[in-house]
Length: 142
Length: 59
Image 1 (cartoon, rainbow over the protein chains, first blue to last red):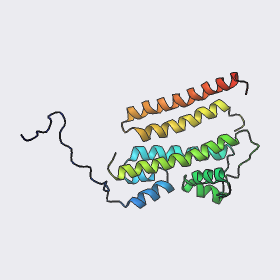
Image 2: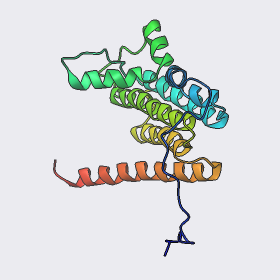
Image 3: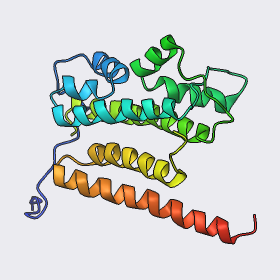
Image 4: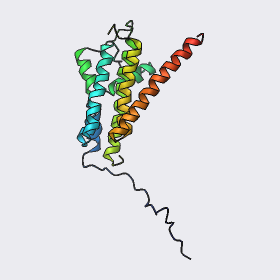
C-alpha cells in the first residue's frame, strides 16, 4: 500500500540554499548599509524602515558625542578598547565625519562620559544588526 | 548637557534602542510600536529594579 501524504501537513520541498532575492549586489547592500545607517533598507525599497534607522542611529551617535563620549582608537593590546573601537566604526560615515572634525576625544571626568560611550557604542552595534536585517531582506527571508 | 539627569538619559537611551529594536523585529507598524513599547518598558523597568536592588544591598 502506497503511503499517502497527510492531509494536515502538506509535503514541503527540500529547503533550497538561499539565493539573492534582489538583483542588487549583496556586497553593495552591506557597504551602503554600513556607511549610511538604514541605507541598505532604503536601497532595497524598505523606505519606512530605512528612514527610521537613518534618523535614530545618527541621532544616537550625535547624542553620544554631545555627552562627551569617546571614539576609541583600535588598540590590539587592550581587548575591551579594541572591541569598543570596532563597535564605534560600525556607525559608518558618522564615525569618519566625527573623526575628520576632531570630535569624539571624550572627557573621562565628565559626568556623562559613560552615557556618551554607551550611546556611541550602541549606535554602531545596532547598525550591525540593521545590516544583518538588510541581508535577510536582500535574500528574501523577510 | 549638564542639566540632563541620569534617569532622563537612561530613558532616552532606552527609547532609541526600543525604536530600532521594534522596527527591526516586526514589519507591521502596529506590531513595531507594540514591540518598541515592550522593549522600552523592559529596559527602564529592569534598570529601575536593579537600581533598587543595588540600593538595598550593601555593596
